[in-house]
Amino acid sequence: MSIYEEKVIDKIRQRAKVGLKKYGVTMEREDLTNIEWLTHLQEELLDGAVYIERLKVLLGVLDEKQA
Image 1 (cartoon, rainbow, N blue to C red):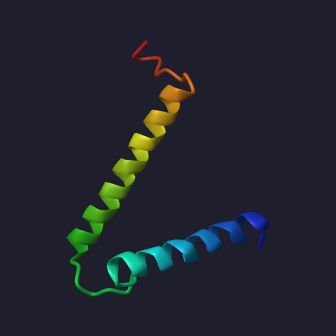
Image 2 (cartoon, rainbow, N blue to C red):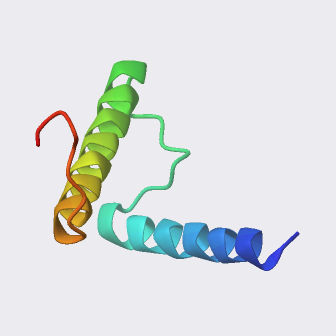
């Protein structure tokens, strides 16, 4: 593997530790329905879209349709 994959693996391990400490469960938990898992994913992706928009504004990147 490359150093980039190793960095991603390290980040996954760190997030797993934080999640276990914060929520007391791992991703192997069985208490969520498929819909609840999908809702969690959707919320994470929406957060990511907000982060992208913020950075685009800070970097001065304008959407041509909005200009």
